[in-house]
Length: 182
Image (cartoon, rainbow, N blue to C red; front, side, top):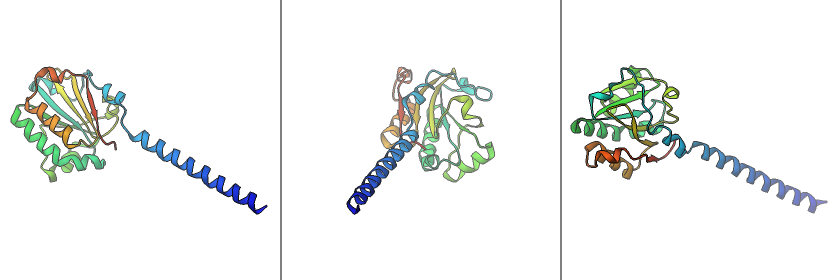
């Protein structure tokens, strides 16, 4: 009987480990952004506030939340990005579910000073995770999407696009990038 009990315990432990591993894998997979989520924003006309898109050839729109740790970790890059955009004639917009004042308080310690801060519902815009960085043309159409905390290569790509080192045609590509998720 002891031998049968040992085999049963070993089987029980093995099944428990397998089930636990499957649950962990499923949980991690659900946090990864899908390509479809990013792709669904490309070509979409964003309706935000007074639609300030025509004030510049390019708007860098960053969807973030003060409760998102990847957003907080990305603030030094956003400071560099807003400075680069300003020097290149592009404008920057922060989209957040937080109040405008809360968002400005979140950005201020890192010196991030966008042209616009808009308090909005991400659901209405089709934004499914933070941070989401979008390059929007003068007609309000999303041309590129970068999701999650960007790595150095993705940051360089965004900065190059904003600096205008690539042609306008590059903004028309329906390619998106995904980085770490929330």
